[in-house]
Length: 314
Ligand code: NDP
Image 1 (cartoon, rainbow, N blue to C red):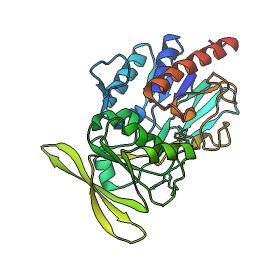
Image 2 (image 1 turned 90 degrees about the vertical axis):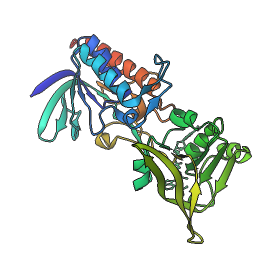
Image 3 (image 1 turned 60 degrees about the vertical axis):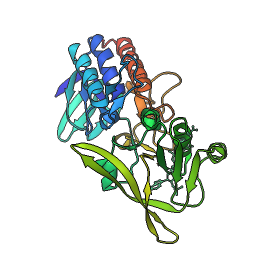
Image 4 (image 1 turned 135 degrees about the vertical axis):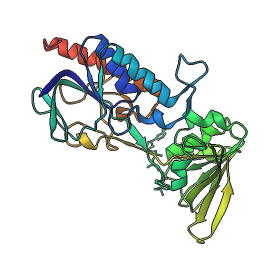
C-alpha cells in the first residue's frame, strides 16, 4: 500500500499551492486531481486578477504552470478521483476505487462548483459570453448589456458589481419575489442600471460561431405565468444561482456548516479531525478567488508540516 506524509485531494489553486509548499518542505505530496484537473479556472478564459501576470493569463495555462511549479519540487499528481476516505485509522486512508493510499496527513481542497442551469447553449458559450463569476469576467462587458440569473444574494451582488462595467443589467428571476437579504435587494432595486424580469426562466442560450470564434447573441426565455416564449438580446449571461461545495465525500466525517462548507478552526486550516486540513473554496464561500484560495493552500501546507513535525513524522 502506497504511503505518503501528505495527500492533497483537489487540484485548483488551493491544492496546487499546498502541493508546492509541501513539496518544498520535502514532504513529497501526492495530489489527487479529480474530475476537473486544475479546478474552476480551467473553465474560464482570461484571468486578469491573478497577481504577477500584467497582461493576464489563460485559466488553464495558469493551472498548468502551478502544477509544473509544484512538480519541480517533487509533488506528484494522479489524475484520479478519490471515492472514499477513512480518517478514523492511523495512518488515514484515501481510496480510489479498490486502491487504498495511506497518508499521515490530508489536505482537502476539493473546491466548490457554481450551480448551472444545465442548458446546451450554456455549456457551448461558457467563457464566450456565459459566466458564473462576475468578479472574474465582468470587466469584459464594458458598455454592454448583460443578464443575471437568480434571486438570491449571489445574483444581487453579481448584478450590482456588473453595473460598474455594463450599461444595463437585467436580473431574470423564476419567481416574483427575491430570496436575497433586504439590504442586497434594496441596493439592486435602487440601482438605475438594473432592471428586473420576473417569473421568467431561461430555456436556452443562443449565439453564433464564425471561423471558430463563438459569441452568444441572445437568450430564449419563457414567462412561466403566461407560458409565452420570447427572445431577449444580451451580450453576456451571468449565472448567479449559487455554489455547491464539493464535500459529499466528507459528509459525517468532517464538520461542515449548514451549506456543506467545511469549517476550519480560527485563522487556521485545521478541521475537527486531527491531521486533516482544508483550504480554498471548500471552506470559503465568501471570497472564492484564485488568489485567496492559493493563500489558504499555502496555510494548509504550513499547518500540515508543523502538525507532522509535532508528531515526529516530518
Ligand atoms: P441562494 O440559494 O440563496 O439563492 C439562489 C437563487 O437562485 C434563488 O433565488 C433561486 O430561486 C435561484 N435558482 C436556483 N436554482 C435555479 C435554477 N435552476 N433556475 C433559476 N433560478 C434558480 O444562493 P446564493 O448563492 O444567492 O446564496 C447562498 C448563501 O450565501 C446565502 O446564505 C447568502 O446569503 C450567502 N451570500 C452572501 C453574500 C453576501 O453577504 N455578500 C453574497 C453571496 C451569497 P428561488 O428563490 O426561486 O429558489
